[in-house]
Amino acid sequence: MSQRNILSAIDIRSDKIICLIAQELEIINRKKILQLIGIGISKMPIDCTKPLSLPHAQISNYIESAISKAEYEASVKISDVFVSISENMSSEYIDFNIMSKDNVILETDIKAFFNSKLFTSLYTKLKEPLHSFPISYRIDNRKSVSDPIGMKADNLLTKWHVISVSKNYLETIYKTFQEMGLNLKQIVSSNYSTSLAVLSEEESDLGAITIEVRKNKTVLSYTFDGQLIGFDIIKIGTFHFTNDISQIKCLTLEEAENIRKKIDIFDRDKKRDKELEKYYEIYLSRAEELAKLVSMTATETRFNSLVLNSVLLTGYGAKSITIQKLIRAKFANSSFRLGSTRKINGSKTFIDNPSLTSSFGLLAYATNHDLEGEISDSKKKKNSILSIIYKFFQNL
Image (cartoon, rainbow, N blue to C red; front, side, top):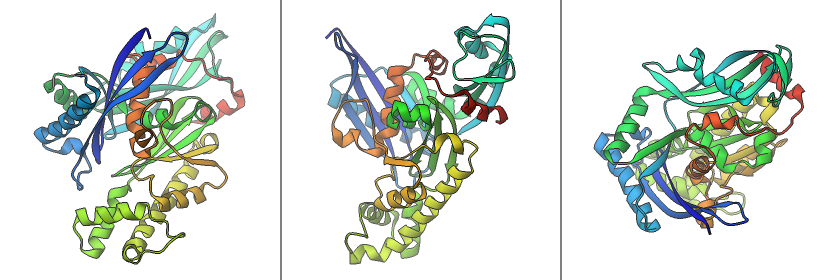
């Protein structure tokens, strides 16, 4: 063994704060291995839908609690952290043109976007860019290609997918971790980190939809040729199931949450349960609404033709047998599976838990990206895919 590197990730979510600590081991004559050595979970209040809207001292306590538990289990003290967020983000698409005058296109030509006025103008008083993905290339305004590096052209048009985040939101996060004496190395969108955790290389290249059922919403993330090309948000999550049961049956949220969790693992097709039957129709109605909206959103997205090859269901609500069945039925013509974490070693109890994929994806990000993150993505040579597919992006 030649090297041991400690990585730590903190996933800020409305259901819980999760701190993961892993060691990256470099074994002689073998690839690097990422081994989970510590996990800390701090559960949020049931009625919490936006964690950073809680009083500052309260959210800090939740984060510190998760960190302390992970540090104790790992027997290490962390100083650098990667943090994932799930709120206050927006998408936009930007065309960036480089005149190359019949020169060979270099990697620096693609990266020139980050020094351009187009990119720097994204930093405003209200927001700033978080991730930037090069999602398509056109040579001389006509030929769409998978990888332009090494080609000769008069100009190169690159379409970028940029995810931006509220500046006030970012400042709150930086302030919180600065007060804890922690160096925040990178903030990452959980929409992106989840796909990094669950998608195989083939799924990522050929196109896939990651459906993540969270507490306060459901996110559909679209990945193609190794890039996050877009995402949609449906404002239904597990809290809405709990709230329905609470309101209709006049129960406390705590009582309704316990019932929802029981129904999650209840397979009505295999057995009957008189107690749960009292609430199942309420649950089923909301599940059918969610499945219908997921199907409509995926069908109507402009990325439909690129990403329907594979559909993965993951997230806090993916354990629901009812939701699994309903969404699987909506995508009968696609490859469908439950998304769990890949390429990280650790207890199967955690690795196979779809509720933790956004957290483990953050570790995957920390392992495979340098501090520039998005910029380094352009270093990765893309697999060759027929250029005709890329013509899709010409009309974006």
